[in-house]
Image 1 (cartoon, rainbow, N blue to C red):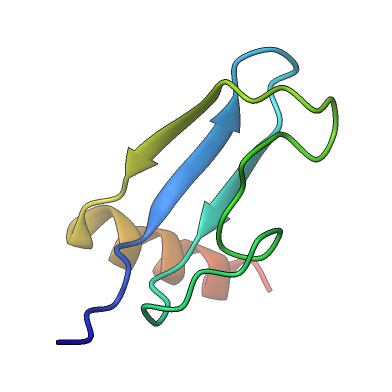
Image 2: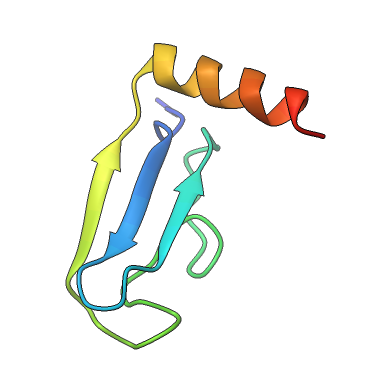
Length: 67
């Protein structure tokens, strides 16, 4: 059964780079919605934090207001 990937925040422990990944399909594409290493420094120790539904809705609302 196909299941979408939950929204998440990926960040680098070394340089502080981070990327918000919105809810996507079950297809993971390296460099778009999946990362094995930091694109800035190459560090492989990345933190992944899953975003709750409420936090995702708030993020979408605030992004629309600031456009």
